[in-house]
Length: 218
Image 1: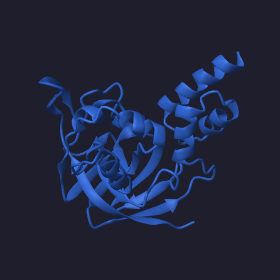
Image 2: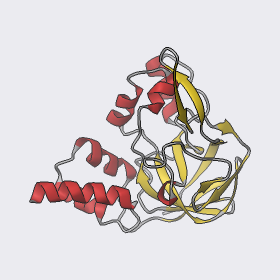
Image 3: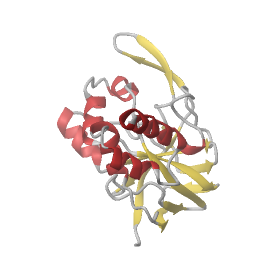
């Protein structure tokens, strides 16, 4: 299988204070700035970081990708205009949607090689940033969460680069399937076992799935 996708937007940024909901303040890395060049490294992108290191960041979550294709849907549904990298992603990619991408797929972008490690489990920071209280629930409902990647080869990514599939994982478990199972089909032991068996799956995801399986199978 061959596939390639184009980059709509690149972004990076360190945590900063963000005001939300009538003057409340939180520190978050979601407010990233546009860049023309992104350097992807094992522990994350250069000049990029997260505030909540327990739930974000790390080698299995070094690069965040969000499909540009979902932006028109959200803008139409909520009658708004979303900023670039609204969801805190490093790469906004065209046509690279969750149903086309499999956990463990490997891609070359510029000098870098990345591997999809997990579907993204979003938090309410996206609702706080956009001031759309129901956005998080809709993202979870639709499975339009984006996905996270580890960096197999460090390198420079430019906005003009193509995201080129190097190798599709043989298990062919899509991000969409894993997200649907995780959020909406959490008692399907067979589906969870199928996802957990993918060797490239992020360990944090595997642990969550195995805990569920153990509870259900006793």
